[in-house]
Image 1 (cartoon, helix red, strand yellow):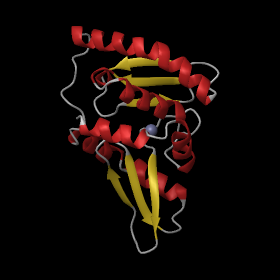
Image 2 (image 1 turned 45 degrees about the horizontal axis):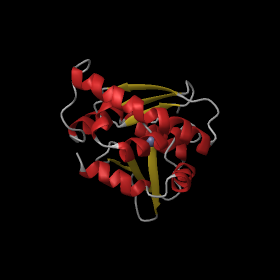
Image 3 (image 1 turned 45 degrees about the vertical axis):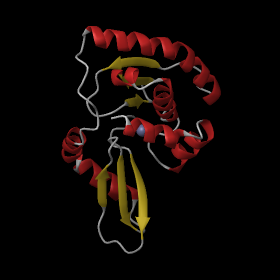
Image 4 (image 1 turned 90 degrees about the horizontal axis):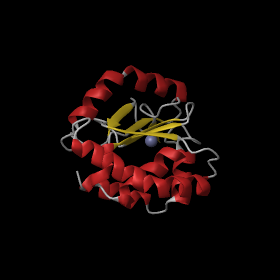
Length: 179
Ligand SMILES: [Zn+2]
């Protein structure tokens, strides 16, 4: 997967008979599956739930009322974020060993704070981050940059997050609390 919209974090449980999929408050996916379930089976299950996932993400009301596209607020948010990214992007690309800075689009996103297309070397960021402060923007940026190396939310992804931004969990919690 080059896009992380269907990426999930999986936990295997010995005493479980079915695959259980959950949409978390931030729109991320967690799966618990019986011990030994093949990865392909889980991928297939998650893919089959795509429409349900979209509905749950939308219903999670995980994001506040949206900034109107092309409004003055939208442009102000974009420009504030561009300002922060002028510092954050080169800093984090260097720390993480990303040779070429990815192209960033700041836009209205209804269900996610950001997304990454590793194949196109492109990151989307939600303009709502402009109201969440630099720590939140930095957390989402590092998360999406980490997807250039790991196109899922597997152990490798979290190990990289822990290494790069040890307080990322606290930042994610703060971001959720602000909603
Ligand atoms: Zn992700």
